[in-house]
Amino acid sequence: MDKTTLQYLRTHTDIEKVLDNLASDGSGASTVDKLSHRIFVETVEQVPVAISITDKKANILYVNNEFVKVTGYAPADILGKNESILSDKITPKHVYYDLWHNISRKKIWQGRLINRHKQGKRYLSDLTIAPILNEQGVITHYIGMHRDITETYEAEKKAGNQKLLIESVINSSPFAMVVIDDQDQVILDNHQYKALVSDLGKGEPARYFLKLLRDELGDLWTQLQNREQGFNNREFRVETKGYQGIRWFSCAGNWFLEKAVNADAFFEDSSKYYLVLTITDITRQRRQMEALHTQTLKTLMAEDERVRSIRETLLGAIHQIQMPMNQIKAAESILRHKQQDEKNSGLLGILQQIQQSGEAAVATMQKCIPEIFQTAVGPINLNQILHEVMLLCEQRFLSNNIEVHWQPQSDLPSLLGSENRLRILFKQLIDNAIEAMGQANGVGKGRHPLQRLSITTDTDSDLIYVTVEDTGPGIPIDKRSKVFEPFYTTQHKGNGQTGMGLVIAKEIVNQHQGLIDIDANYNEGCRLKISFPVRRAID
Ligand code: FAD
Image (cartoon, rainbow, N blue to C red):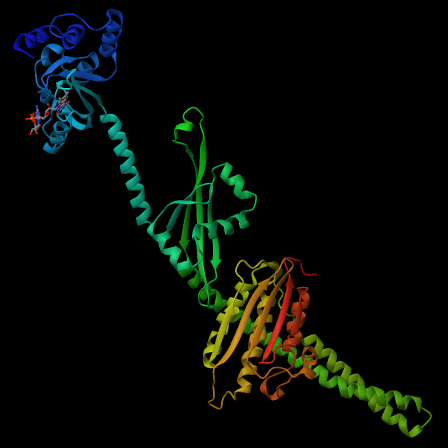
């Protein structure tokens, strides 16, 4: 482009003239049809993209209305100047190098630069530069098209920053946090949650807890979701192997509705639910509470045992008195039939007196039998009861060198019953097992070979099963039915055995509409099988 043309362009901003000039072959004859030419010119003039046309050295020959708006430069200010007038000089050199490297090789370049508005304000420009070639394929001009994307960029960055902020807040949280979509897929999680994945050994923890939550909340789950209400403090015990391995978690959740961002949803507003689930490990707090609870239980159980031993002593004494009393009654009835015999009347009187005073003694003793404290009936998790009883017996396990195999069925359904009574039941069975294993191995004589106590829980649709199995001497087949009879014991009574333990155990099982049995097929010790109906009220 010669000096005259440049001069011409500097004083005539009309694109028609510029384009005429660009399109002319030098003879001045226009190659573009006049009508379409005008439409084309007006389009470029009014298009809402900042357009500039330059010579090969980026000297500006033409700018459209939008260019004026975006840059603040009127045509008179900028025509003939280099595009570098727009540069804020903080765009790195390599960007310009890349720009020129491409466009000078006839390629289109697209990128972002920092420009400076005429008033001095910086803006981010999204720029596309295309080379314009003549018929011989030689670059004659460049066309630049740019938009001020400062606001979009700021919004993008803000969103990115917010995401980073959210991620760092989530990651610094001491609780496991996870965002789950409506297909139960984890879409965002934090470090604590990742740790839970390996710690818990339950697959995807989110799915595990979702199942527990859905089972517990039932229909309420959907209602809360639809109302975007959320839930709090839902506590779950998670069984792991070994009776020490129980962990407690508290779950809280909040739903939010996210609007779809894909193109399909542009006209049709579609959205889906996400759940932010927080899982807090409350095992420590629980253990502290449990320690207190165990202490209270120990006191209660000690009191209960005291009452029971008084009851058993009195019942035993009544049982003992009853036998001679029956014999006296029989003798008295024989004598009464021989009333005519004078010499027997004195003896009959004595027998009657003995009988009366015996009956009075029995009645007094019966009055003295203390009542067993009854507790309220409610839904009971047998795993929890067994766990508590095992904690109560922990010292005895250690001192008797007993290895405990605790295999609870996770998600055990509850049964309706009395916590206290069931605790007495299992304490009795475990005490019996410890006693039996101790007797077999001569406790007190310094010999304590390792013994094993296995406790398992299981369930099917109707029943909950508990087995208590020891490696003691077992109960001989001919004595198995008798052990549930009052005052029968396979041990020496001098050992503090009254023979009432299994009677009481059976009574408690019966009160809960359950069954207790000795497994006839088990020969390595004693295995007691207890079953209870799932959630049925006791009579
Ligand atoms: P300059 O000295 O101009 O150049 C820097 C580097 O660019 C040089 O080292 C060299 O590698 C390369 N270079 C410069 N001119 C040429 C050339 N003619 N041939 C080959 N390589 C060359 N810049 C902006 O900052 N903002 C814009 O909006 C903008 N729009 C443009 C639109 C068009 C159509 C064109 C062709 C260029 C545009 N430029 C724009 C680029 C501009 O011309 C400058 O190259 C840039 O601003 C850097 O200016 P400078 O004075 O810092 O460096």
